[in-house]
Amino acid sequence: MANLLRSLIGPRVPEEELRTHRVRYLTPTFIFMIARVLLLVSIFFPYWHMELEAPQYPNGLFLTAYVNHLTGDVREIDGLNHYIGMRPLGEAAAFERTASVWMIIAMFLLVEGAAFIHSKWAVLLAIPAITFPGGFLADLSYWMRTFGLNLDPSAPLSSSVKPFVPTVIGEGGIGQFRTFAELGTGYWLAVACAGLTILGFYFHRRAYRPLALRMAQTGGERIG
Image (cartoon, one colour):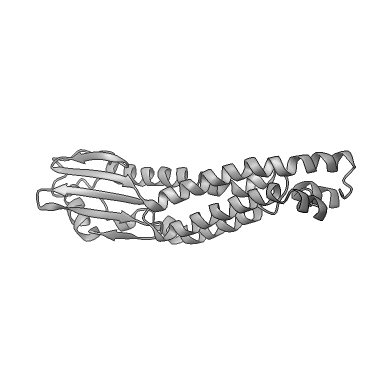
């Protein structure tokens, strides 16, 4: 059991080794720290923006999505969507918005934990943070597709609008409505977190793999 835990946690860095190569061992920890802080800060910034142009609204309507709530002209956009049979925006990703903050906090703690695991298994703790930006886009695309392809046939303009897939990024539109969507600052902070986490594992491997090999050669005894 002790050997299993040692192989999972990885070698501990002897004090003399740490003093001699302090930068080598602190670099991955520092990178992981920046990565998880960026992810936590992303909660307070928009992940997605959309502008909708319609004849009734010459100045346009705006929608901003954070990980846990929507802001902007939600009521007005819901009113327009009602005429083509699309469900209210608040019904989309209700579970995701409720759980998102706790999920990000959990990913924050997992990346922090990865800094204390000095073996290849540390990567498993960081997989959620690395894949989170892609998961957000996939989830957004799913809900946009679900809403666009399941229009209410009893809506006032149902006969003039066929089911469609709203554009997630870039320009799109249906009928007289035009949209422009882009990713927000919060999303790019999450992307930066994922990139820095991957970079952190490069330095993590470079620092701890030699120690792990030396530990294996000495039969798991303490090095130094």
